[in-house]
Length: 92
Image 1 (cartoon, one colour):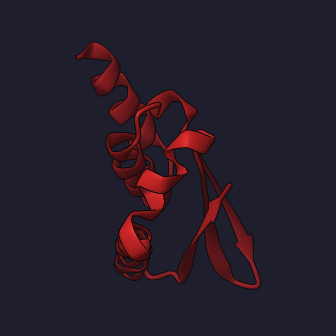
Image 2 (cartoon, rainbow, N blue to C red):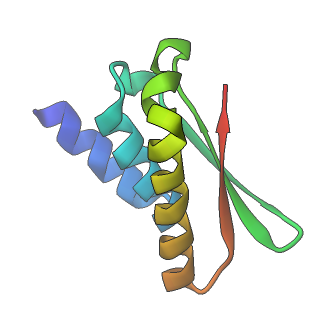
């Protein structure tokens, strides 16, 4: 349980967009230590890149892409609250 608290605290230190993606992704996958979230800026838009263990990619994508779509919506809403434009890229 202490590890979960530490992971959440570390995610909170990152930008709010990365933190949201990391916390949700870690909750969805079987191997939370393999979750990597990277943030960059391209053409004035924040790009949040998510990568996981190969076996966990299906859990992130979900049935017919519904989980991935929900994550992208979550990023868009969090970005709007921060006053920026953002996009989620899921890397395999």
